[in-house]
Image 1 (tube, helix red, strand yellow):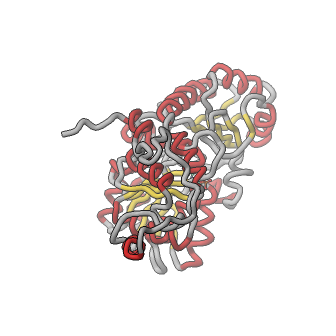
Image 2: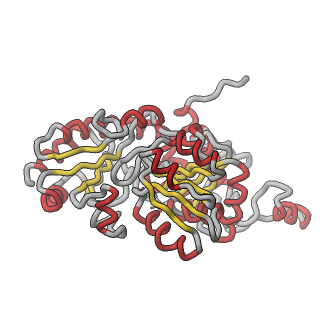
Image 3: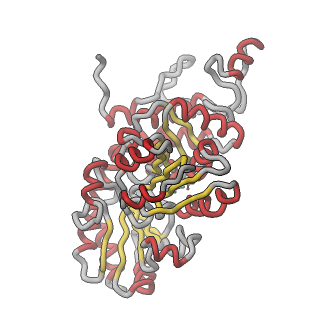
Length: 394
Ligand SMILES: *Cc1c(COP(=O)(O)O)cnc(C)c1O
């Protein structure tokens, strides 16, 4: 049997094929909307799906550039095939539209990305899809939420922005037994630190805007799953058209070549920053899956090979003190998004999660004083020094 390549090697090589026409070393950008058929028979066979091949850039597999990226992420996630999208939200929308219909029920982690929450709470009910938001860090809560109509469990772990972790293997097993599929938003951990499909999840998806692109210069999304699931997803992609731009696909291919190196540094820095914050007298609490104080540290240890670059914390003095802290940073940037090479700081209650009603934010732990930090790959001493000087102003 052929030896399986290691993850770092896959980041560099997976999906890439030397250009057979001119021998280009890197994957070319296929800036084309349509593809020429050799004859009518070939065109018809491609349209019917009888023969593999490219047809039109909106129709899966889009272009050869997209195909390389989809294959690369599928290999990294240990899945069968992948599909890229214009954004993480386009990916999530296509997944729910392809798997759910009127009368179905969806169980979702109660703490999810703000726009995911809005899609599930504002758009899906209008289509006749019933949604229950559940604290998935407790398996009993998940078990109790199932109905005969439950067709999907949507998990975000670690969750944005509370960094709550849930047990993918347990919940995926529960979903399977109930005839539902389990979808995991893997944006925070990335396939470098967490491979949901290996724990029984049916689908793993990510916003490429974050660590996969890795440089805060593009929007994109990707979904990986079984060939059967991806076939039905592929149809929805063609009908709804939220596909990734070809330049973005190329940038993601480039970004992924250094994913392993970046993620190691993000995680190493985040652990140092988390420990610094936890020992600082002005800080009330810190949530980082790598800290033994994290409520689900043991679950994180089981399913993650590293803890990523995301953490949240609250300082004494609540919202006002947090605001002074965020206004006083000099090296860190006050910006939403995450997974950039530089350190980003933001206030979920007034920014990324402002779309969630205040009483619900409070109930699920997105406190008004919560500050979210996406720890970058700068020298950790400089990040800590900046936070230290900003904390002194609170
Ligand atoms: C950013 C993000 C999304 C949405 O991705 P976009 O690319 O911004 O559409 C979804 N889930 C998580 C966890 C995110 O952080």
